[in-house]
Length: 285
DNA sequence: CACTTGACCTGTCCGC
DNA sequence: TGCGGACAGGTCAAGT
Image (tube, rainbow, N blue to C red; front, side):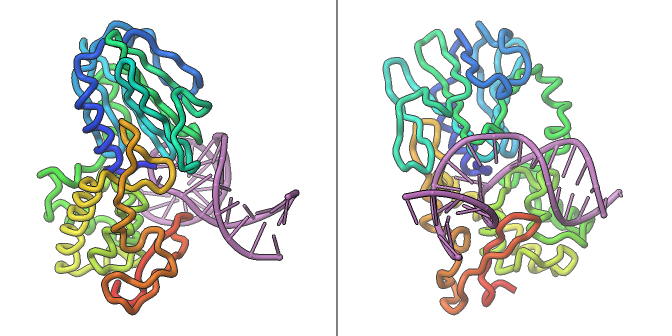
């Protein structure tokens, strides 16, 4: 489900409400959804919520963290004491009281608020570990730079692209060790913004195109965050609201519709690495 | 070594 | 209406 803009939207919501809350209990309704020792969470205070790519990291006191990866259909919903934030599922197009049958973990806090982890497809995970163990996780240790932070420079992107000339541009963008947080929607949308075909090989990019791709990635992600992300079916933020990016999307889920830029092309969809790739065959070259 | 495919799951949607 | 197959935001292991 969620890519950088969606996870960042959830993070901002949680960061507003959660810090200072003390964990009182953890109800694990699907055992495999939690890795590590949940008993260590009891009595800990949530200090801060960070994001590394698509991974949410909850910093607790005493050097402990818990992480949440939502994978395809995960949701994190915060409910204040006595409030009734509803959990969307799915595609149903309506919200239901929490917990419901796709609620995998419920965290209860001393102040009466609760955090619900819903996940239809059960790919998502909550992990409890020390800060050191977290940093050593292969996925974290090899994660590429945050595309909206200063570490992600044009020079970095150029150098990294030069190392993988034979892979398709979209494949490069989806590889989390190159750049953190880009998924299928924003890979396609970034390529459209850059007017570059996603299936082209990295080695075919000239310096001007690399520069355009660089700014397109940043602009696309910033625009998506400003829309609160994309709600295709399952995604809702920490308080149950949908994101509106798909209303301004140019190619994702617009197969067969006219191109918003050149007005001539009809958006096409092809399979690339087993996933859908959307593009305008006329103005993306 | 680098790249591709299948597996992990549940659910929806489309065509016949 | 029923049924089979394709497809869905991600990542990892296994295979080529």
